Length: 121
Image 1 (cartoon, rainbow, N blue to C red):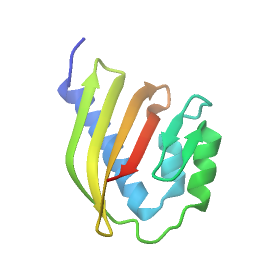
Image 2 (image 1 turned 45 degrees about the vertical axis):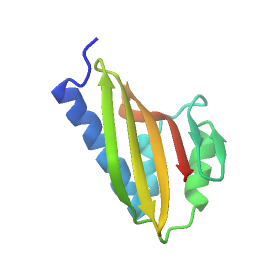
Image 3 (image 1 turned 30 degrees about the horizontal axis):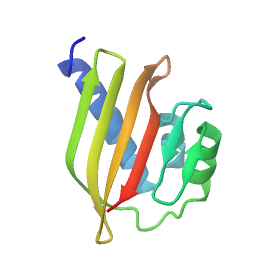
């Protein structure tokens, strides 16, 4: 297995960047698109545990849309072969520190988050 093949790493970086832009702009359509449409998808948030794509989409549709800007640091993306990757980052939003991890999978539709975790420090 090849780790961090440059072309695969660039693909996942682009998907991660697209996700981040959608997150801070509250572009729910793109956020929904980038999560795997499966009952197996999980997102643990700072205040919620979401099991399955439908629960994640429901959460996104009711989440507040203000105060979403944040600064990232120590972002690390690692690809494993050509179809699997992890993305981990620390963030600061409104004076609070947090961290985020995502597991990405290449699907027929493109790169999708299959598991995510967000927590505050």
